[in-house]
Length: 136
Image (cartoon, rainbow, N blue to C red; front, side, top):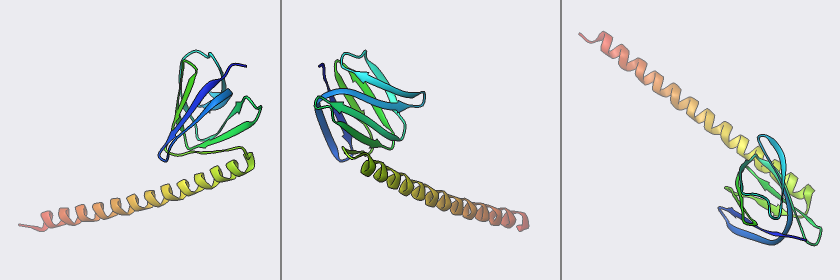
C-alpha cells in the first residue's frame, strides 16, 4: 500500500504523519480525495473537518477554520491558523463547533465596536461641519 507524508502547520507548531494512505478534504467546489502519487495540487480548504486514513486503517480527523493545502511528490502540507487533530469524530466535531461559535461571537463584537467607532467619527465630523458653518 502506497503512502505519503502529511504535514500540518499551525500557530502551535507542526505535526507529521508518515503513513497516510488517503486524505479527504473540501474546498469551495466540493469534496475531493488524495492518494499517494497524486499529481501536484493546491487548494484552499473550507472551514470544517477533513480526514485522513493511515496504514492501520484508522481514520483521523482534522478540524480547521480554513487551510491552504499543497500536495507534491507524495508530501501533503496543510497550513492553517490553528487545527485540532484526533481520532474521535464526535469530540473533534464538537470542538470545531465550539471554535466556530467563539469566532462568530468575536466577529460580532468586532463589528459592533467598528459600528460604534463609525458613529463617533460621524458625530465629530458633523460637529466640525457645524462649527465651520457658524464661524464668520
